[in-house]
Image 1 (cartoon, helix red, strand yellow):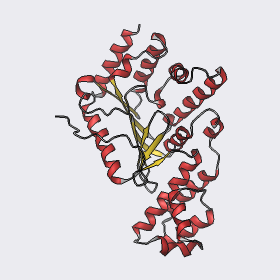
Image 2 (cartoon, helix red, strand yellow):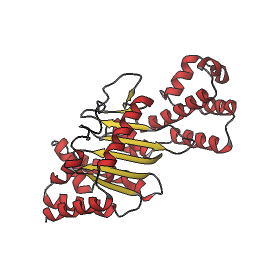
Image 3 (cartoon, one colour):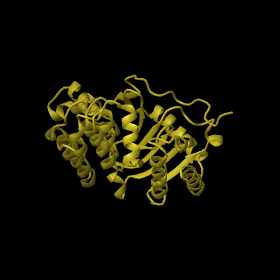
Image 4 (cartoon, one colour):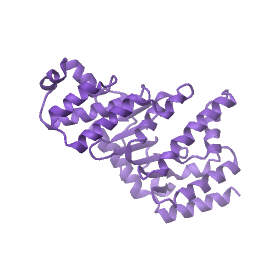
Length: 303
C-alpha cells in the first residue's frame, strides 16, 4: 500500500482553497500585507465590521484589503497596525512589506516575456524563509544552468526570437541570486527521471548535473533524489513548491504550476495535504550522500 493513499489532486480552482495567480509580482506583496492584517484581526477575535470604522471604510473595502486585491494604502494599514497594538518589531515587518508594495522589483522589467504567475512566485521566493520544491520533469528553476534553462524555454517556445530567449534566461538566472543570501533555505526533491532526460543534449545535461552536485555542497541547498523504487508509490504527478515565511510575516503557501498557469494553496486543510506529500517524499528520497552518488553516476553517463 502507498505511504500516501490519497495524493491531493492538483488544484483546479475553488475560491475557498486556491487563488489563481493572475496578478503581477507586486501583487504578491499586496497579498502578504492583506493576509497579515487578516491574521492580526482574527487573533484578536474581531470581525470585519469591527475594524471597518478604523479606516473610515466599508466591510467590503476591508475584505478587499485583506484579500490583497488592490495596492494597500499606507494610512489604512498603519491605522490598523496602531489599533491592533503591534510591537515595534511587528510594525517594522508591516512597514517593510508596505515599502515593497510600492516599489517596482527587478523582475517587473521582464513583463513582456514572462507570465505573471512566475513573476509572482519570484516575489514570494524573495521574502520566504524556507523553500521546499519537488520536481518530476525538469531541474527546479532555482538550480538551472543558463544552457539548460535555454533548452527548456526553446522547447516550450520554438518560435521565440533569440532576444526573447536571452531575456527569459536572464530572468531565470537572476532569480537565483537569493541563493547567495542567508535565507531562504532551499530543499530540492528531484525525481530520478529528471537525470535521464538530456535536455539540450549530453553536454548541456552533464554540466547541469555538475552544477547540481556543486550546489549540493552548499550548506543552504539540500538536494535529494527521489529514486524510482522508493518514489513510485508516493510521488505526485505534478510539481509542488512549499514556501514558509519568517516569523511575524505572512502564512505559508503551497505553489502548484500547471501547463497554462499556476495556483497557490492557502486553505489550512489543503496546505496540510500538500505539506504531508512533501514530507513523505523527503522520507522516501535518498540521503544527501546517496543523492550525490546518483548524480555522479548520471554525470558519467553523459561523458
